[in-house]
Length: 248
Picture (spheres, helix red, strand yellow):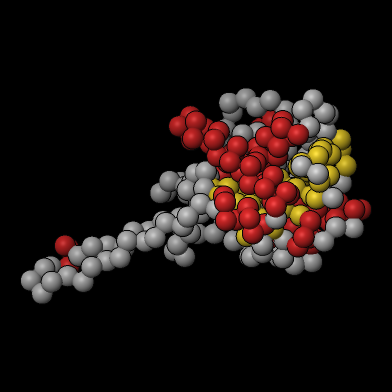
């Protein structure tokens, strides 16, 4: 038995927002492997059981606040007596990766993502596989909470569709062939920073090459997750989510 958890926030006002990228990957997996099945409310999550290859898999979308995702994860792990390091994959958005980029790892910190932090608490540590899907960094001067709780632009949505399929492929590979194979096949190569060249003696400082920053630099602020109301996901409208929600 394997457990794949997609992190996000329930409710129509948060559907198709950047913070719900984990939900969107789970929806793609459900379409492929549990077509037509109705999700059950279990473990404080909308769940579907399916077969991926020869493995039975539980797909789970927690219906708690993002900051309390561990409640769902802990219940499912205990019920099925699963080992987080071997049997669980968590799919989550990443503000520090370019749109559509994939980064799979066997463990690691939460990177300021409160959903991952709560999962680590419930799992007894950070030794569990995670698949981070890039949603791009926020525009300069924009509110971080407003950005992640906002919906993708049309241009981003067009680019996101193949990325969701690629992320679902990576999750399937994790089930069938293990994390190492999935990392080798699907991790997006990291971009290298451009090195600044030492200026010549007769050059002024203004002509010196500058190091290029990218999402993930330590100078950027850490993500701040926001809570979202309980309930099942419904078709989304076009109203922008309220970015002033408070953690609880």
